[in-house]
Length: 202
Image 1 (tube, helix red, strand yellow):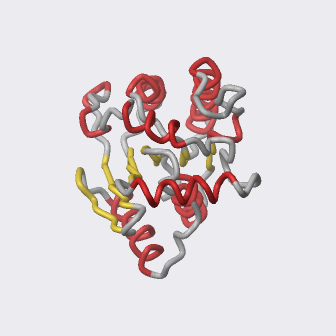
Image 2 (image 1 turned 60 degrees about the horizontal axis):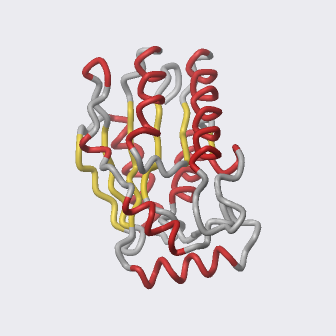
């Protein structure tokens, strides 16, 4: 997967294995990884709600990093929620600017609220975990309310993204849109990891 920039991005609700998946993919492909939680805290002081201004700063830094990697002809994997379309549109512009055509979304979800509660409880008890402050159920519920499906996005320049759905409760992987060699590789990575039980970090 070297020699030509590509981008793989996670999208989805809180506590649905996005970080685990992004790390797995980046590790196998030996691609640079951007982890949003490392770009600054985006919660209010109470830890129960997201601060949109802080979140906007994180996405601004992320887009600068994507620009840097593409400028240096490097691929990138991004670990983020990307729930609202407004956060995705700026990175689409960077993608178009550099003529990157290999685009893969991995949409992570879990519809079992009891499983989510257990994951948030686990996260809150382990401060070293990514985004450990985001342990409020309200943050999860807000991420669901604000979710705009990536399948409905209109990418600039007629670009089209591959979409892989990952059910983090059942560990089911489905490739739903635009089968490409890169998307097939990502699908295989996740399918094998799920089958062998190596996707078990919240």
